[in-house]
Image (cartoon, rainbow, N blue to C red; front, side):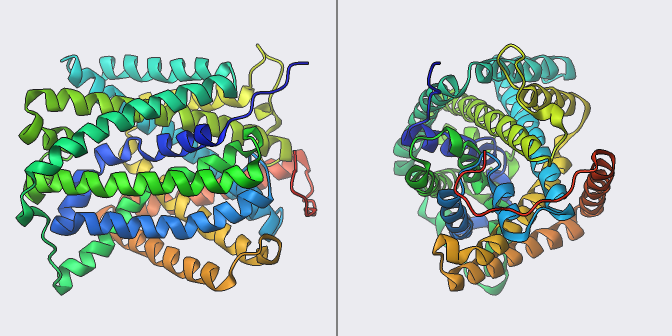
Length: 436
């Protein structure tokens, strides 16, 4: 029997970088600039620090518990197998589905703009379905194809963003990036950081591929820290170059194509094409990594009984039913729904999952040899970020605020019904490194 291919360290890093530098930096840069203004790089820096605090728990837990269920495995270990854990499992998988749809929409927008076709529902739909289908087919061939493709996609993407940074750094207007540190702007720094933090959330996908990574006890933590470090430096440099060339007003006006617009002062007409290609590589690699992680977690959670058994990997063209269901629902959401509000809701639930991971890490700190003081500090900081996001939703997006609550309730009700139908009993978790 042929031995299963295992991802190396740099392929695992590529999955983290590919997910983080996805649609976020291209779509949310202008939004961050409108809030933080001249302090945009500081907000990116602070958001990165918050991500590092969460990554500490992921790295410690990920080196101890090797499972493609990732954070849900950590939560089960920490607080037990119960209705809350089941609800979080449903919500986490839902986040993957919607993220794939969001990345597909971003890819379609840049692609159609690049080839100068109108952004009609028909053209958008064709491109969105095609790109999801392509990466579903790629994932069909397994982790080797995914890892190799992700590695080269990320290399191309970083090369393009590197050109943006290297050429743009020389034409910066210092006045555009001069910090403004009065009381109002200091508050806005933190407010923007709570929004920009969402562009760092992809590092968790590394733990969802931990069973497919060589020497996971060592490489999972390394891949998390390396990918987060690479992305933090790139984000800060991009924000400096973009803000320094266009200023707050220019970035705010061109929110959807802020990065492409920022390339024009120093790259001219070719700047838009270059950055559009970078956006396409970024979003495509994010689709690739997220689809791979989403199928992995669907399979792992189904095997644990947290999702219906139909998500378990079957001998169906040697693939995974979880992959096909994840892909199919992503296509449904990308065609049927406006994902702007849904993306905001998934950010809300991502932070909830992070809080439960940190709580679990505290309870498992003796097993992981983690610092309880640092874990508590992380919990307090992430709570502050979550509350900031809730305040933002209440003030700016009341529909999203109430929808977030409704989605959580619906997931919990589904969990109750599913458990009552299957009669599955909750089981005690044994402390072992490998679960599957």
